[in-house]
Image (cartoon, rainbow, N blue to C red; front, top):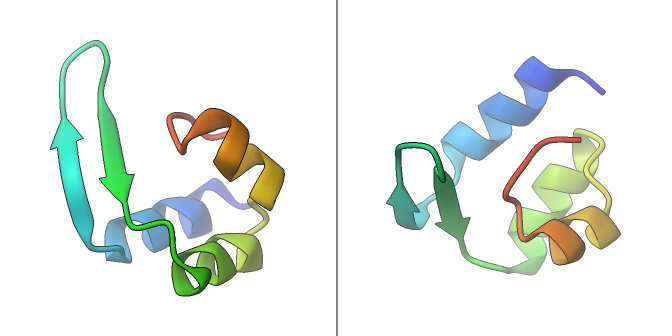
Length: 57
């Protein structure tokens, strides 16, 4: 998995909510388009649903 490609996709998504600090996160829409983009860079649907996009594997 190319971490830079994953970060590029995450940075391209519209952020619904976010927070920085020790418990940093971003919240994006759970849509087919977002899942397709993340799947294309190696993030499986199971990882997205299990981890709620809180970390990169």
